[in-house]
Image (tube, rainbow, N blue to C red; front, side, top):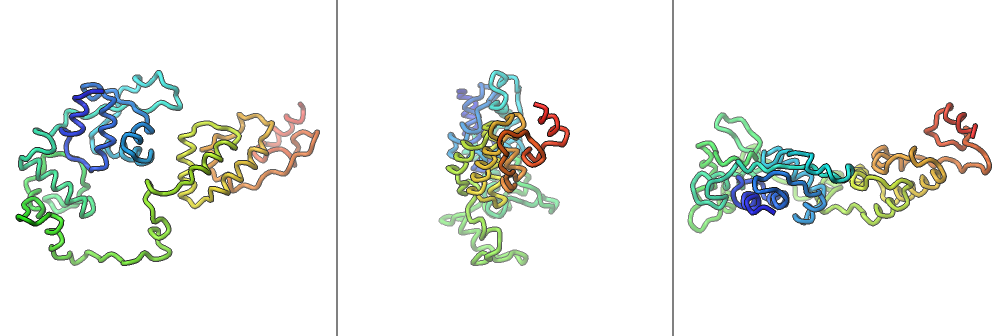
Length: 301
């Protein structure tokens, strides 16, 4: 663990969305003093940050987009198995805030408050030219008009939140509905991604009974995607058991990996008919994916 990298992530890195700090600090824990060569697994970062692995993957993508991290020398993780080899990242430690993010200087304070207030208003701000721009470079060198957001100079005894509450409503700003329509996406999916129940016990049952247990992380992502599309976990488990029975005694090389099976929606396929005893794979009993040439060749053995 490098003290220099940890200090940078916790104090001297430019202001950033708060949910990224824990993930960035987890990377820093595995980097050298120059911020290079960090390759903890996504599962380990998720444990550090107390998040779901999907959330950590989103954090890493956003940290790269904001310029806080970049891909490093991938050969540093070459000793790990290919299927379990994480990406190697370098931290952008050249980007620093003089005095740290808690510094009281006007530029740093304005950048920090602008970041917070812009996130409350939806994550976008207007440039001096009037064009909206995406928030989030985290750069403390803000434009001179950043102090006019109305949140920097707060009156005594008044919080920025209460001050914001007294602002007149914009003519185009719509009031939020008191209740979600029954057919709206929000009504169907009331939970955030991190809180959604993906029925992991059912996934464990699926993993045990599927005839080819390979690439579990990809299978987990495919499982989540299938449930996001509306698939029934119990149906998937039942279909996997039927597919395992169908593939019993056949060459496992022709059995797709679990992630591919889930992504293709194969759990909705009808099972093949029961094979007749003492017979080869003819047109009725051969798996549906076999071509006529493969069926004829199989009958010769």
